[in-house]
Length: 380
Image (cartoon, rainbow, N blue to C red; front, side):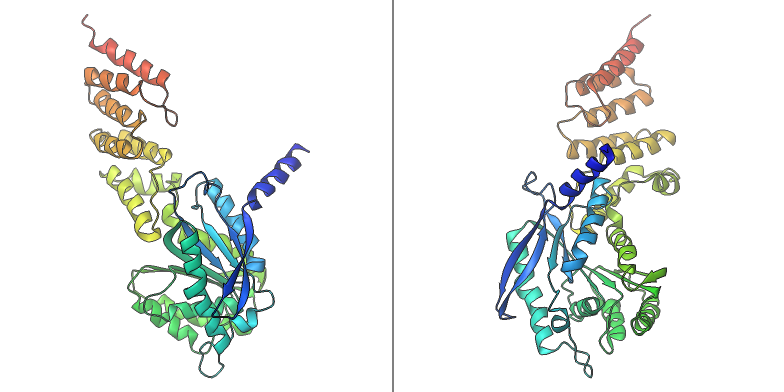
């Protein structure tokens, strides 16, 4: 019974942030309904900015995407994200239609295209605190349509999630050309399944073959073909894969990353940490403080490899990210302790004991460290 109640309250919390707004569109000549989900920290973090995920087919894609993001956010594997879903339950075919001969949007779908780029996204970016990173996602008809945003030289979106798309004529070639020529980083994810609609699956596989030959380092491409999945169930398989592809650089240091990439380095452990967070900023436009667990991972690598002098550089990063806490002085104290300078170590641990606790670093721990170092400086 307790587990049932906990699940109930979790579900309430999960979807409590969802709301509906009406957008009057001059491009479409009508009012459109959108669904908005703001991150749980939105009100309590007034300076924080968030990536945008725009969902076509928002009437049925919204909840599965929100659920996956909330789960990833809970473990800090995925960043908090503003989700915008366009309700297309009765309009998706007109919104996303294309000319069968030319392979271009129809008059109505061109208006929908302009509604997104010239009305909806400016409205969202003016009203909410957004980071400069935009994702768009859709399924079959809408997944094909979203690729039209790649046709422009300067792609409007940074990441594309195309789930079993229905391509316009020539689209599998045009997408490959656009990704080959892009001058800015782009993420592109597409999926299909062995049980998918055959007429959709074949062009997707053709595009996959075209994209495999792309050598542009700015393109991050992934294709998943799921076994024992249908045109509809592949959506639930695809969503976490797509999100983890796009936000891979955001993830904290894992045990595998520590073992296979960090601790085996001959030096430069702190530089690895710096580069990891710089990559997150460059790719995702996100400014996030270095996680405490990531500090501890780099500290562990330094200690294991006896590269004690690197603790000074780690302390500089600690002071920048957590200036009111004991973290920076603790790292300096640890450096002096490992290098055999008990007097300086004692001074740093004493100073640390007067600052705010953080993570598993406590005042009591600093007092004990100070006493241990002080005892080594007493003349016998």
